[in-house]
Image (cartoon, rainbow, N blue to C red):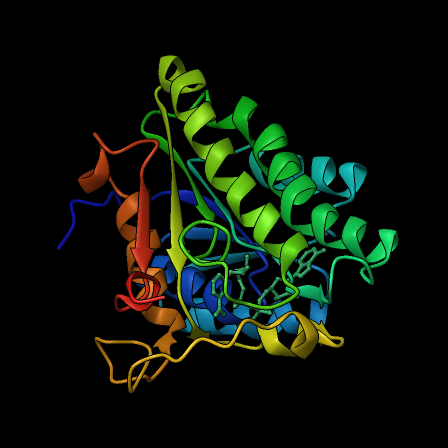
Length: 261
Ligand code: NAD
């Protein structure tokens, strides 16, 4: 049990599926108001219905996280009148995984735009509102890729964004402390979501280093992937007042997967 205050106003980016959707569900169970931010209204409408069924309140915010104008307007729309307490920076893509000499500049740019520029824009436009709220928090969804593991062949752009998100979190933990805004990162291991649908692999075998993992490469589950809800409960903890002295921290949610690679 956390001493989470039930009336918080929270934006979750990439709320239409996977970890973002599960985070919205976790907040909904606490009676919060959640701004569901994503690219397609249809997907978000379904999540909004689920949020309302669980006792939360949902607002649909259609925006591409890499589009400054759209992000500014979506975050203002949600926050201007009744404020913002928590920003969950979750939207992300695997993008194209390919050998570095073959990875095209626009493929590189796309992954950086969604994962890193998207993180910057989410935080940049949220901070003026978070500053006005007491006990506000930012939670960034990074990954074990680029922080502890480097074994996803061809994932150089993805790994670079995930490492950069952790650097951003640590840098901003210091900068935003004076405003009493906490910021932390969550690094999931393999989690069952639809992220594989947004992954293009091209000739990654050529840069794969053969590594023999022990039976079941996720020790805690004997190889079974984690669930989005298992990441969401950590997101909810970091957003809550139970984590009031936690900032600039990185929590791995991976069943020890990253420790044996
Ligand atoms: P997912 O594909 O189910 O969810 C990602 C969501 O982000 C989708 O709803 C998608 O529509 C949205 N999105 C993508 N690009 C967007 C954009 N430009 N603007 C707005 N929304 C956009 O995948 P997920 O696994 O839930 O991924 C969520 C986060 O978790 C990502 O940052 C990912 O890197 C991270 N992560 C996932 C895993 C995993 O194994 N699934 C592991 C480590 C980290």
